[in-house]
Image 1 (cartoon, rainbow, N blue to C red):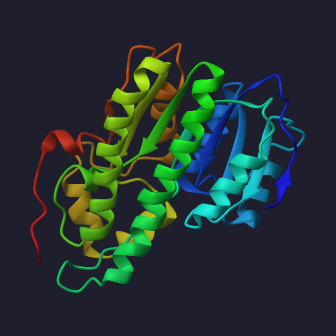
Image 2: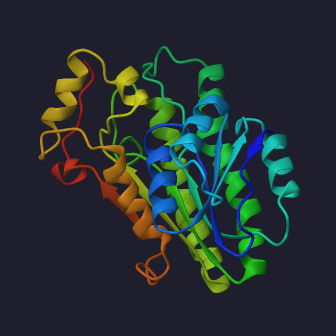
Image 3: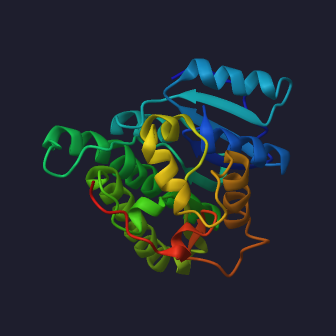
Amino acid sequence: MPMSHASNLEQVHAIVTGAASGIGRATAAALLEEGWSVLAIDRNIVALEGLRQEFAGSQALSIYGIDLSEIKEIERFIDDLPHAIQIRGLVCCAARGDKTGFLDITNDQIRSIFELNFFSTFSLCQAVARRMIKAGGGSIVNITSTSGLRANAGRSAYGSSKAAVELLSKIMAVELAPFNVRVNTLAPGPTLTKMAAHLHAGPERQRLLDKVPQGRYGMPAEIAQGIVYLLDSKRSSFVTGHTLCVDGGMAAAGSFEPIR
């Protein structure tokens, strides 16, 4: 579990998963600019080194090469964190996509998607929430998707995993509110990330854009600003159990994507 640049123990820390690229990377960068200390997690340690170089000289960034689909790696990461580090924020961005149709997808594919998208989120949230409670509170933001809010063809695994994260987060919000731990989710619409480039190829790209009233893909930095808002207890102190759609109006349009 490589690590670089130990964080200042006196600062408030946030864990960001999937921080090597896309929304996770943009979120880590935005939080650093806001003054947070960031513990950036991704299995791609080489890409995390790129993030470290972008913020060269910053003592507020620590990077961890962890495969979040391996629950024991999550447990080891939490156990190894010094108790002096106050984890006040958690952003779970790490996810894997799939566009196999319901009649063709296999149990192994479903399990693989759920291991990263749901079970790793559950395990990390549980471990961090326990730590937050001891520290007096905190804020958790789980990234879902518009695919977890409505039925999209080819999203039986991905959409179901995100819907599971959505409901889990609401249950967490209710149970953790008495301990001053807020839990919210953010559902991005189509966003210019490597995952989107893989899943939204060819004609599907235009079909998606046709469903976005603003008529374009979002940028990772735009999604990150919504995450920062939900994470920041000064800005969103009375917000918990909420799903913020940052999707160019896609959820409001409410159009169903038929099977083709």
